[in-house]
Image (tube, rainbow, N blue to C red; front, top):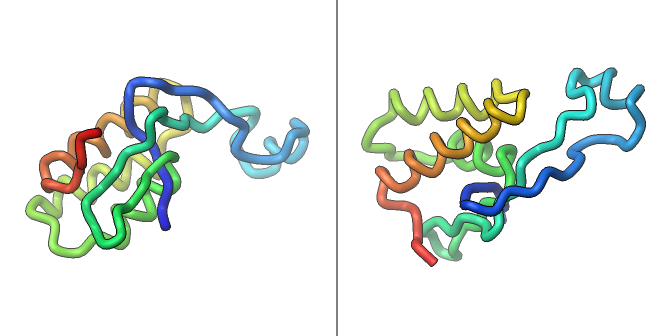
Length: 108
């Protein structure tokens, strides 16, 4: 089951190793990944829970039958390219908007 992110409550969590050397090696130097509280719930059987940008990207990659495939590609590009806190926030909002426009977002 996927768990990725969108919502109003955002708390940064380290997404990689705790030491700076490990973070530098993978190019995410101390970059915290956004987590959303509450997680997004998307329509599916079973319901899909998205609580991180990585999970959102995985979902977008695997989703078939998008009404707006060009927008889907753009959202995926933003999710994959987000590195700063602002870019992550914008990518998270783009994913939420896309999921809502596809009729996938379950309001809780």
